[in-house]
Image (cartoon, rainbow, N blue to C red; front, side, top):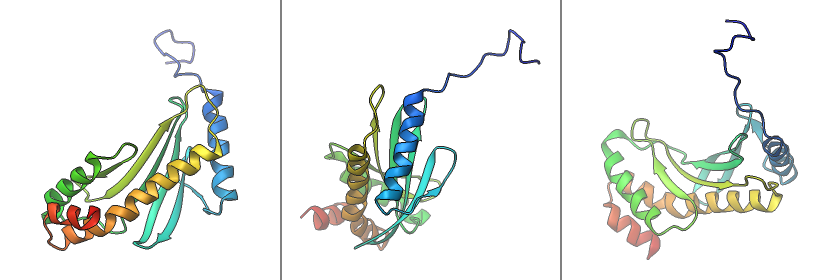
Length: 165
């Protein structure tokens, strides 16, 4: 098929706001000391070391959708035999959250906190980026100790009680 073939439909036109947001994200992460590394054409990877250990962070701009997604991955995968209990724990932890979520890939055992925002038609500001990063890191810092308890054999309800007290 040639480029002029009427059966070939062009993809959506890039949105300038998405491209500006990606540039803003890259500048913010570098200026704020996150030491971002490229993680694909529209994403950055960062490392974070906090009270619960090291976390792998990812910040991505979905250009066409004009959305920002920040995720923080737990430092270790949940073993297959503890995934059902870990999923229950993360579901219980996520239930009362207004912003952000905790999730588990049942196939790989990857647990992560995630926060996204839609900035369609609005400029993505450093403050919005900082807020999304703070929410994501806070969620993982808060709930990772309970996830570790569940992986080590604790019941999900007991782990939630210990964390949320």
